[in-house]
Length: 158
Image (tube, rainbow, N blue to C red; front, side, top):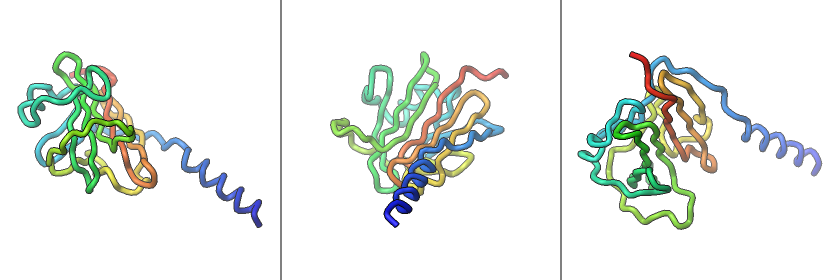
C-alpha cells in the first residue's frame, strides 16, 4: 500500500511539473487594471510614471518596480523598457526574504487579457502563450497563480 501511495505521489509531482501547452493569441496580451494597462511594444514609460510615479529599481538595475495589492496579497509589478518603450512586465508575489518593503498602490487589481487570469487564482490557469510581438507566461506559486509575465519578442510589423 505504501508503494502505491509513493507511485501516486510521484505521478502527481510529474504532472505538476509538466509544462503547459503553448497557446497562440490572435491579438497582443495586455496586463490590465482599472487604472493602467501594460502592453509590450506599446506602453511608454512616461505614461506609466504619470499614473504611478517613479519606480523603485528592483530586482536588478533596469527594472522599474511598484508594489500592488492583488487578491489580498502584496505583489510587485516590475517593468523593463528599451529606451522608453515597454519590453517586459511581470506581476508577481515576491518570494525573496529580503524584498524591499514597498507600500502597495491601489490599482484595482490586474488581469491578463484576453484570458482574465489574476494573481491568486487556482493553478489550473497556468499557461504559456505566444501573441503578435511577444509571449505571456502564467506560473503557479504553491497552488495558486503567483506570476503573470509578458515579454516582447521584438517590435511588431505594422
